Length: 100
Length: 470
Image 1 (cartoon, rainbow over the protein chains, first blue to last red):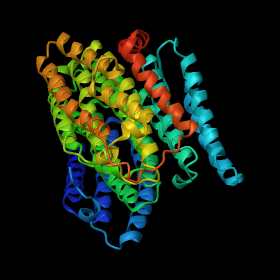
Image 2 (cartoon, each protein chain N blue to C red):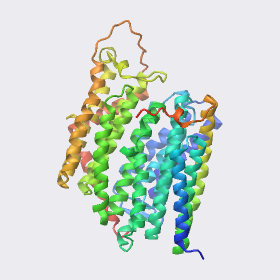
Image 3 (cartoon, rainbow over the protein chains, first blue to last red):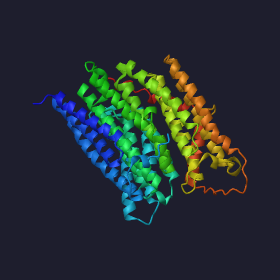
Image 4 (cartoon, one colour):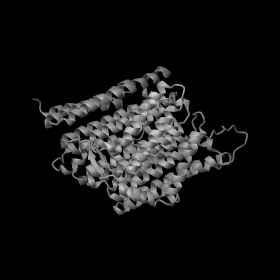
């Protein structure tokens, strides 16, 4: 039985990798993938704590995260494809005219 | 499940509208009518529940009380106004009312949430349809705005979720109404979790270090959707932050109160300062929305019943002013070109009625007496002083002063004379937009002149400390 600290540490690591990915990468697909990684890190942490406390609500939360992530991917990929159709290049710096 | 009837009515309306769109493709506005009736019916039903005994249900996941009912009414107002502003506009697509209704349910959930799970579901149900709505005009700017909104939304939801996981780890329960009773959990796990959750919600509410997405998304999205984002999303995010912090963490208010206070002052001043140089009216309103999020935070930062009441009060005049300004914007933009401040030149002579509505909305944003915005800012100032936090009070005054310049600039433009040769688009009035503008103007001035009835309602709703013991 692996103790809960190690699992949560792994989840924190995954979360960091995802957060850095969103902030550093320029391709919306990769950014989106990194954001999903942050979600999955949270799901992993929920499961680890749920096992530790013998409490089901954390596991329920993990299922909800998976379901919602699937819905978000559906919308996200459709949007990315729609934007790509118009300009045939994907670079967030060109897309976002960051004025503010 | 007597308490869930408003949500069920809106959800049923959305499904029925979806069915109607598929089965009767010729009746273009049938879906809009069904959703409009569902929203109105839900509003009436929620109003009849006003004297309900506050209680928790669904194993402490949702709470029904005057707080959640008031939130329901506010978001339904936001939904109805956006629906009316988009009335009979084919270019938003037939699915517009359905998505709008789904997003409204998410906001209603946030008002009733007593559990981290309900917060997550509410925020996602609010955001997912909005990503599509932002792109619903099928323009390049709309698609890019939606993509940007989606990426930042997914990022901030990730932060929120990880914070929730840490809170769960610290307290072993998802039900945040039980948190005050758990005293043993005062660890770094709890604090890092709370910090991440605050950051996640701050993204949705557009608090200053996390506000960069707002102007771009507002600018690219169609005006009725922007109206919904500015009014509904603000209501949803602000009320859940208030309930989570002021109830779930009221035993540890010393630590988060200061943080929220600094964020509030920063947001009020920076948001209004950045609104000053804007030339596009929508960007200006985006920054104005950021500034108003700061004012809402003041109510949370004071951590008192006065502060909660002031914040709940502020939501309505803010929303009504949003309706007035975006309603005018919708009428003058015609077929969706960007409206800049110089487009407003001479408007007071060309379209005196529209100009008058815009003036009322802008003055309410700025907080001029006899408008609802003034009364709202007055209550916030009072709450800050009662809580003996002079820093917050100074922040409110400075933010208001800076905002005054930002909001007076468009008004000054409207009174500039221009050459008659200039080509001017003719305004096409519709019944739906007249209804929205009338409600907005009457409400704004009514709240400014005679706020007592709404103050009474708000003082009932802000009293959510019945939850104790959960």
